[in-house]
Length: 315
Image (cartoon, rainbow, N blue to C red; front, side, top):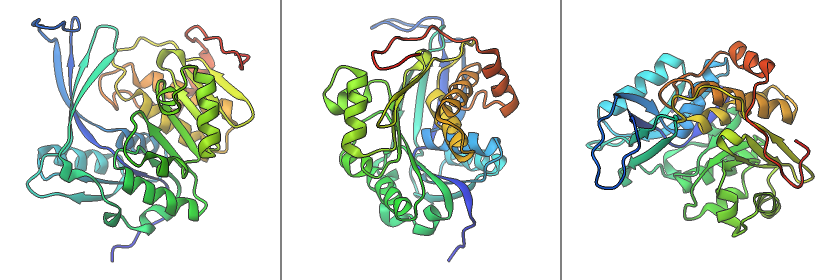
């Protein structure tokens, strides 16, 4: 049996090979648009989060599934170059996950995805020691059953679990009750709780699932978090955005990095916002995973987009 070493972070979840197309204008139905530039890059929610944390000096492990194609080779090289330990299940004669990403002049992206069902990671394909030999676990819920198993093992070992969710998958409730830090996309709380008001939806979500923290990332509007007692809102940092692909992935990396430094919540969220903002200044999900010094410099400059107003928050 292959032995494991203690790492700071283990991630269980998505990888993808991104073909990024930069467009002069977003296409309308029936139109033809000449794109400016295309590039093929490694991406994926959990994979990118793990790579960012490794770049900032944490030790990391990635657990996932790939095909046996050139895209898989790209991922293996990227993990090896970053120094990430991997536990990857290879599926013969299959294509690794692919994304086509359309980026408009404002830097906003639209993602088209393709994934072979055989690449669904199953609970029996992961090992308990891969999860428990870590200080923190990060999941995205795509492979819900495997993520739930990993989260349960982490909980039993008193390891904090962070989740990045933007879609509701079958069996998601079993996962959510095992998440400590539930950080989701803007619309997820309202869809999940059938509650249009974001503050109310976050409160209901946190209380239903017993999370230590429930938060929603808001793109250029920042992040809103609820810890069961009070809200914490942090506006986003102002940068020249080239491509917003991976902003949420790097936000989660920044949050996890701060959590493992035992920072206060406000500092965690500021570091996460700044890391995400810096990543948007170049193309790709890992376009500008910047140094800690560069991220801190952006925080110090404190140039932000206008704050939103929330009933329960003094921004």
